[in-house]
Amino acid sequence: MTSYSGEIQIRSYQSSVGWENIPIQASEDWLNEVSKLPEIDRIQKVSNRAGIVKSSLFFEGAVFKGGDENYHSPALEKSLIQGKFPDFSGEKPSDSIVISKHLYDLLAVEEGERLAMYFFRPSPQAPLLRYFFVSGVYETGLEQIDESIIVGDIRHLTRINGWEEDEVGGVELFLHPRYDMEEVAQKVRDLVPHDVDAVSARAMYEQLFQWVELFDINIVIIFIVMMIVSAINISSALMIMLLERTPMIGLLKALGAGNRQIRNIFLQKSAFLIGKGLLWGNLFGVGSALIQKHFLLLQLDQSIYYVSHVPIYLNVWHVVMVNAATVVFCLVCLLLPALYITRIQPAKTIKFG
Image 1 (cartoon, rainbow, N blue to C red):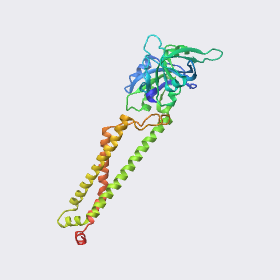
Image 2 (tube, rainbow, N blue to C red):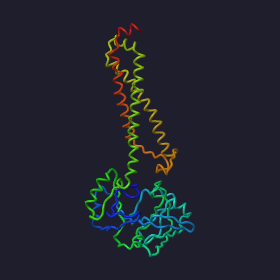
Image 3 (tube, rainbow, N blue to C red):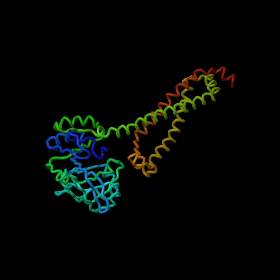
Image 4 (cartoon, helix red, strand yellow):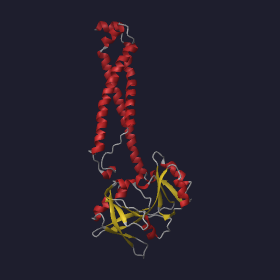
């Protein structure tokens, strides 16, 4: 959602109905001040207006989203499955539009075909008719976008709405990575006029963000469970080794070996077993991830998960840190069963043997 409409949106304080926009004055003075913030990567002006789009055979309700000459939507451009994204930087408004695959199939159109779009006006005025040409087709997997959004030149909406040249429906702000959108939104509010507001994507899509955060909680729970299981397994393995070699431990003590020396022998053996397990685990885990990343074997229902396949992100340092944490945690857990060595008495174990 943030790659589609930015991490922060500047819009009117007045509530709008549906997709219709209440215009704001996009003055170059405060826009320049906002663009100077180090957290801001890109600024673009946008406007929305609902209407009905009609092909030669079918018609459907849609929302025309207009972008200015700086308009750039990573979500849409990466999701293009056909055609190309139009250029809005020409002297005249571009008649090219990008539609979703949902509308493309529903309207039964082809690339380059002309579509009619009707924009309603208050009664008794008749709807305004504009013609556009299909330049590209996208599919993001986000129902809020795919079911209705058509992207075109913002200058068409400026004329249809009867706005001044510097009036727009809103301004989208894209941030550099690793910046908190709520903190930046507060900084932007201090720079914009009193009649407009800066709203973060988290505030607009709170439920979606909460849904995504559930995955973070699951990851932590799974990681903790896996660490506990690993500690129990390796501790049990060490305890079995100690019990099997009790006579040997007694003999080593009788020959003068100290508890610390004997404990180090078993800890080194356990570390070898941990390393061997991690080697096979990494080969299987990282290998499976690389296979999925390049061949996309595990598919998902895009209408539920917003993506068509299981996405993979691999970071070498993450893998190294998880392995290091596992080794340290398991070795610490081995100290408790290793204390069994101090309770072994050579006289009894050798006699038993």
